[in-house]
Image 1 (tube, helix red, strand yellow):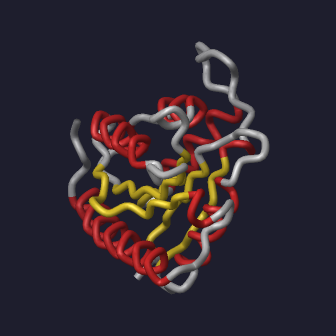
Image 2 (image 1 turned 60 degrees about the horizontal axis):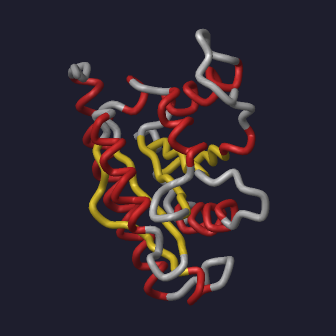
Length: 184
């Protein structure tokens, strides 16, 4: 069977961010599964324009291509002011059909809230794009764990549950899209 292609999207572009370290930790957890092909899609690697252009730029096309080739997604997002970062919303909006009928999971982080407010809002956005968000979340409290997640049994378990849900939905929806194109 073809491995499930999961794109781990690093949603923060701030200087001094911890999102890249959180994503690295999560990718280590996913690497334990031979049936997954994980790609990191770091928004800092794309030169997105400040305003939405009439024609897509090379960076926009490259990002949309990565979204299109993935079977499933895990969005690594911080919580800033009870929401998710504006560059993440901008990137999400550059794709449309490419998100449809694919599962999205979340690894969130913040101070005390573990990023839950950001995830709640992202669920609304991805539902509007006809993506399927999975129930469980890996939530990291930076005040408790520091800037790099400590691989506690609880976080490891949460990552395993998230990967199991993303894998199940990813395989089911990939088979569904192959059998019948999704119509929105």
